[in-house]
Image (cartoon, rainbow, N blue to C red; front, side, top):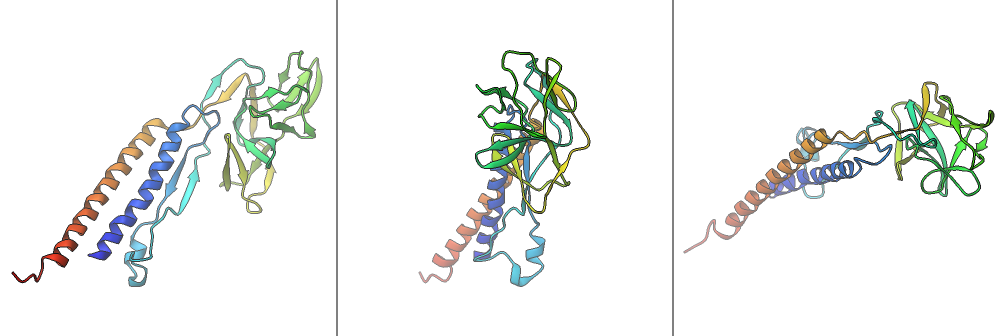
Amino acid sequence: MIQGIYTASMGMTPLMQKQDQVANNLANINTTGYKQSGLFVKTYQKYLSNDLLQPFANRQIKADEVYIDYSEGPMRQTNNSLDLFLKGSGFFTVMTPEGVQYTRNGNFGLSPEGFLVTSDGSKVMGTEGFIRVERDLPIYISEKGEVIQKGESKGVLKIADFQKPYKMERMGESRMRPLLPENPEIVSAGYSVRQGYLEGSNVDIIKNMVQMISAYRNFEADQKALHAQDETLDKAVNQVGRIS
């Protein structure tokens, strides 16, 4: 019976993690360049098939992996010359206080000095350093990321890519960092930059709502099983064998 309590309680742990992931996805429905995430959880079978590995006492079932869905989000027109949509494989490269990071969020602007920056002031990197332009002149950005003013090239956006499947971790602000050295940076071969557009979040609202309801129902079922085991144990301890 005690084993039943542990089994039910450990089944609830990954469900709580699942709810956290779904809630985070739904909270970022409108976040530019956000990529939804999910969980992989191993079956109980590998524990039940071996007496030594059965869930008990100090064993805990946890999610095996938090994965990120890197599929392309919808294109949204803004008509802002510094909003960029990256179609295809790759990431914009950004220099932050924590080092080089990568993002699909092309909501850029200009610093007082004329550097191309993200919304939090981190500098956007080009193939030959940071990109600096004249603040009062129109800016044209080609499909290959070349920044042009008055017919003069001001630099080319550095579009980086990585070996697939990607092995990256979230760093906040829709930015990511590769898990080196397993995931070295490579040159992206298949991309185009669309000026005046942004990439929306790729969160599937319906799918995530269904997952949230499913996780809640399963958690509720485990709670009931835990409560039933507790009641049975209480009767076994306090009522069975009682001499009246």
